[in-house]
Amino acid sequence: MTLTSDFAQWAREWRGPMMRFAQLHLQPREDAEDAVQDALAAALSVTAETLANVDPKRYLFGILKRKITDRLRMKYRPEVGYSDAFEDDLDNVLFDDRHHWAEGVAPKTWTTPDEQLRTEQFFTVVDVCVNKLPSKPARVFSMKEFLDCEPEEICATLGLTKSDYWQCLSRARKQIQICLNQSWFEGSTL
Amino acid sequence: MKCKEYVFKLTSGQLDGAPLDERLQAKLHIAICKYCRAFTRNDAKLDAMLADYKADLTRPDRNDV
Image 1 (cartoon, rainbow over the protein chains, first blue to last red):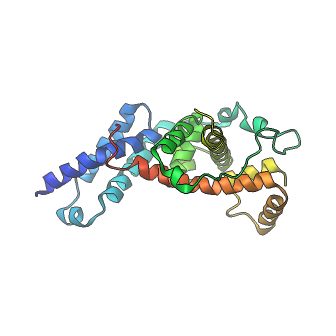
Image 2: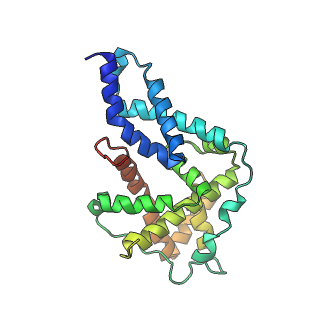
Image 3: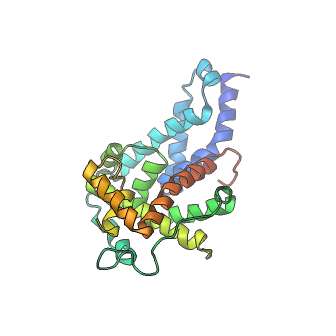
């Protein structure tokens, strides 16, 4: 096997997963495709020695993460003000005037066995809930949870204050828990 | 500390590095509030779910792109 054919094998195997991952962060699809192409092009500089010893997933997704954050930085850095991310204030639904849980939405502990949470059916529900997030909290959430970025990097990339960051992350985690409650744990359908 | 403030501190990640008195207030709150206790357990479980979801999303043998 040559370096080129080994690399082509990598690209065939990992392009699909890289696209799915990139599409979590970049829209439209063409932006995600460009990031994946950039990452694969950058990965081509790999030496034969590295190629033989490196974990391809770790190597390729490490490069892809940098390509995605570069694009997010270029796309969103000039944007100011995240206050409109919370126009439809979820907290008004979740909490009453005394800041206690509102009737009918107070959470119950999830008791589904773990193995049922590793099924394609459940991942489809998670996918729907993640994709229902408003765009700004979604950006913060996906950088934190899927790109494993530190809060400082997220704020710098998206042009956020720490307070905006907290609001976005909180909104995302609350909404996903409520969505999973409604769509899976309480047994209703999507 | 009331439910709304507790849930915000938890879900924004602020409790992790919070001063001792704030963490004690949070512990006191979940000791007396069964709903926030349930929310906290679910929030912890969400991390494991998201890790599994991410692993599934980046599996090379998934062919839906």
